[in-house]
Length: 191
Image (cartoon, rainbow, N blue to C red; front, side, top):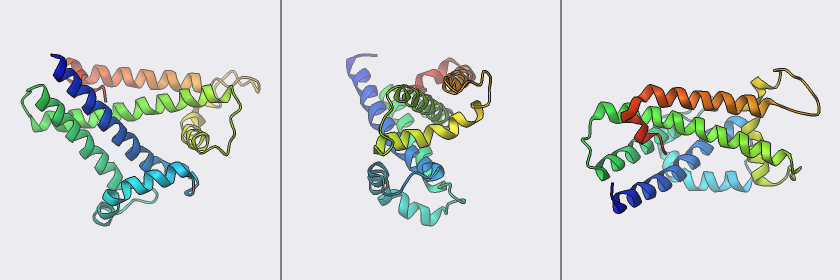
């Protein structure tokens, strides 16, 4: 790949990763019950509502889970993959696009969960203000991810090893996805 295709891939990855992050937050924040008046939540809802709102009328939510947002995330991943394939002058195979979009999206979600836990663990060393909007979002997103690992030994009140266990589990899951898609798919697991 030359400079322009590398630069194009970088721009595509940056723009679509940001869009996927916003959509992922739109999907997960109601599930974790973050205050709706949190400024980060307000931004996410105002940014995504023009698209998610009309789509939610066609695809109603299931309890707290927004199916419209999940479909929009998958469509966003597919568009990113198609643009990347066009930039690299690859053949557009619909089955490959569907497969690599789904696995790439799962990989992206697992990778985002890894970083949320890591940021939460680092923040815990500095005793951040719990009323800070970013701290509230990170804490509420990491809590359900860490909950299954809180009971693992050693149980010590002074040291919580659940972030270590959770990040190791997520790294193993990322590795499993990486090996499942094979060499052809690893190109698209970078978003």
